[in-house]
Image 1: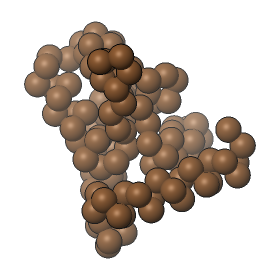
Image 2: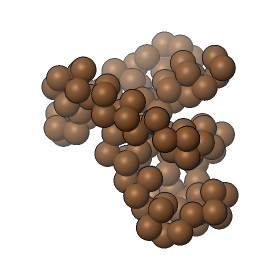
Image 3: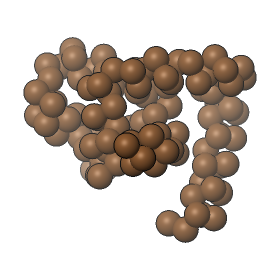
Image 4: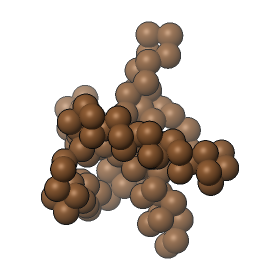
Length: 112
């Protein structure tokens, strides 16, 4: 994806999230919520893993040795902060990065 395509995708995504009421109007509060979610090392590892490829719930549980409740809690936290989203493919739910999640990987993880 070219930088122009990525910028367009991000702009469309932000507009959609605001229209759906998923993104807080107060950007400071929105950023605080995301930073709080990403303070957890496991959630950062999940985001980094999803940067490599989309994964099903079962793949995430196996890779990180999580119980159902641990996986559910951490994935719900990442989903509620708009870092990841669900994608259905042939009746299987996969988790993928959103532009916000991609931005985190690109601007934080890749610069370590």
